Length: 410
Picture: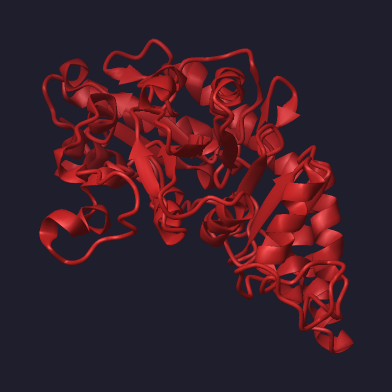
């Protein structure tokens, strides 16, 4: 086999030499972000309370995300905790969550002394399976946290139907899905509260930061109160009516976020163009399964391009072998999450290392097995949104690398 056709992992020439042909660097910024930061610096008003950047960003983000209200905070993890506290979720309550997500979705539930109840996901969407929700509801259930994984909206019609039937709150974890829309409505504004992350890897990047959005003024005010050390908007400065903390975002972060928000529509469109192209090239590819298409998804944020791998389509080569080979060809990719209920933090009771709130039902997470999630964690490849911001030639590199691996393993 010639070195050109030999896999890079076996000593061949990679499809993409990232030193000679580097991928687009993230974050993307220019003099606009520099100007915004200098404006804050020279104003001397670096604090949300004194400045205008944070308040302006909240208004602009709420409008962008089809919400009436937005509250900026320190990060996306805190945003979920703030949302739960704002809705009165606490000790003894149960919150239904998916296990295929970043830990904050469930650890925020522990942080408010409630109990995470994991239910399985759909293998063809990677999102929570709405048909499993009702069976998990108990008299202690207070809320559901659907996660819009990888930029793909969850099935919000069915989720909201079940939630309203059982009088449950819905907190949308939209950390990976800024700008995504379900039936023309932006995610985060469909449930009672929605949460977002501005962490460095996210499509809207301020280094760190988060937001809570809502169309319900009472819930939004409650989130503001938790974020501002338990104050209320109409109260005195030293008047603290609820348990909160200082979760405020700085004026510097808000200034960057405002500049980044202006870039987001064009970036979302570019990601979508390249994601659709790659899908078109791989849709009938043996050994690969793409997430199912759904016309109700009117905008996909494409934070992660996902593929499910079947080794039978690659002559029995294993999933770790495929990921390793793809990276060697110059395509940054990874294997993603493990089932959250397998993390040690959720198994403290069984390990004898202490436990969380014991007012409710004691869930033995170590005995939990959710087969779809466990299968997804063993066969799903992640490709970052940054690769989708490039040219058609960049998208072709992804397709070419997968085709090369397939041919080499036949």
